[in-house]
Image 1 (cartoon, rainbow, N blue to C red):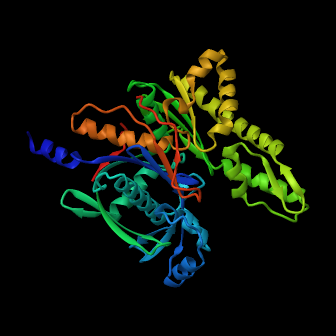
Image 2: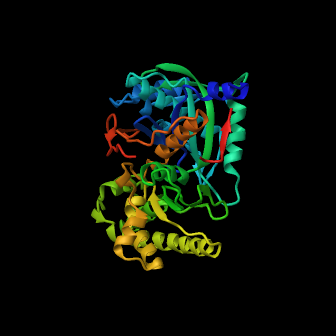
Image 3: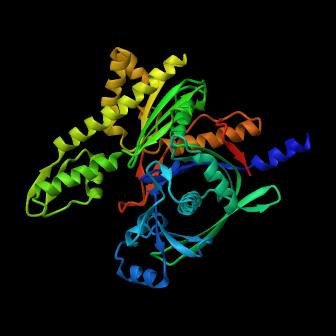
Amino acid sequence: MSKKTRTTNSLYEGAVPVGGELGTSTSKFCVDDKVVMFSSVVGDALTPILEENWRRMNRSRDRRWVRNLAIWDDKRGDWRYVGAMTRSSETPNWFTERGLVQNMDDAFVGLQAGLFLLNKERTKDGKKPLDKIGMGFGIPVKAGENAADEFFSYLRTRLEKKGEQSFLTIKAKNVATGEEETIRIQLAFVAIQFQGYGAYMAMLFGKYGMKLYNTYVIDVGHGTWIKLPVIDNEVDMLLADSIPYGMHTITENISRVIFEKSRQRYRIPEQRVMEKLPRNETRIEVPGEGVFDFRPVLDNELRDMVDKILVRVRQDLGELSRRGKFIDYFAIVGGGAPLVFEPIKKGIQRYYDWNDEVTNARVVDVSTIGVHPRTINSVGFMLLARDQIAIELDRPVDPSFGVRELVTDELKGDGRDLRASRQPLSKAVIKS
């Protein structure tokens, strides 16, 4: 065995594959059969006075780490609120807005939060701690921006080097209980790609049987929607883009209409509107005005969004056709996918003049492969890491996956079950 081979085996041997993405609304991290999800926001520095006052005033019985998390920022020298904890912050900072990472320091805190929470979930299940990982990681894409290289360059400055190895030390605090924990993780490698590529990897494992099919991913999120053509297993960088028009725009407009209907006397928080959409509820009580059904407003807003999406998709399909490239499958993912899936599918059907049978086969409902459209990217990035480990160690890759539990920072309990599945490389792989 050559020295190079021994070094490679040492680097990858024993690494646990994990996946993560920094979304415009929520960040998701996946290990084994669990996904952890929390708001993509970092808040003010957590001063001792703020912490004491918050703990004294807090009456919630939800004392989980995911709900009450602060991460120590050694660069800025203070604790930072993360996710749900930012409700106690005067200046929350969304680290992914307008389709780009806005603040590398805040995004790094979000990355640490995700890995810490994955480790908590893994040890809670009686499994070995995450002391060594290989990571598939997704960040927002913007046309003309080299975001992946920029984030990786920043990441290298925050890791501890020891010979050929790279380590990340994470110090976390549960603000509700006052507990502090520190963990140290070796990063065997980080494979950075654009968010929608995770959905492609999940399709590659769960539907394509590891065969390559050209795939057009439409990722409709909270703050943006992403278009990501993957041609011959590579992202088409000329066409990939993130457009700052997502579900936030729609819910904000609905909130504005309700405000006007109430004669400008009551403004419904945009978050209250957003919470109703996954439950397919459109009736909301306006104090002093009765119940307002925003279904007509929602339908108009969704039609407008779908029309804008289809314009860009048709342009891309025309460009690909001129190059002699064609799309085999379409995947519609993201938190907004359930609301726009059918009309986008119909628009694609009209473009190709397909019958219903062909349309249903080519425009994929990702829930049929056992993943939720909101969490599919994080699962796919975990599979990307698993694939890379298998390739480097010259071992067969395990194509099976399933999500048993989604753990969120919402005030609703310890997690919600998702449908599980027993069914069945990126070039941007950067070693430490």
